[in-house]
Image (cartoon, rainbow, N blue to C red):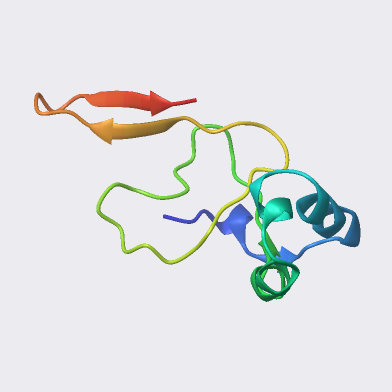
Amino acid sequence: MMDSDARPQKIAKADLDRLNTVGWLSKRDPAFRAAVLKHAMLRHYKEGEAIYLYGDTADGLFAVLAGSIKMTVPADDGQEFVAHR
């Protein structure tokens, strides 16, 4: 579910440079990095806003440039289990 503030924007060169030099993507083959980053778009999310909901169709690859995420999955009792922060 995307909020209106999360409309994709063109990603800045400085952020592209960072994705090319830091993290798992920087360790990939240059052709693969170029193919992924060719489609890179920047989105801003509000605190607590869902980026992706359990059961949604997978339709993207996400990188966190600033801030943090909390990854939860539904538990059998209907509560949410925090799988990763």
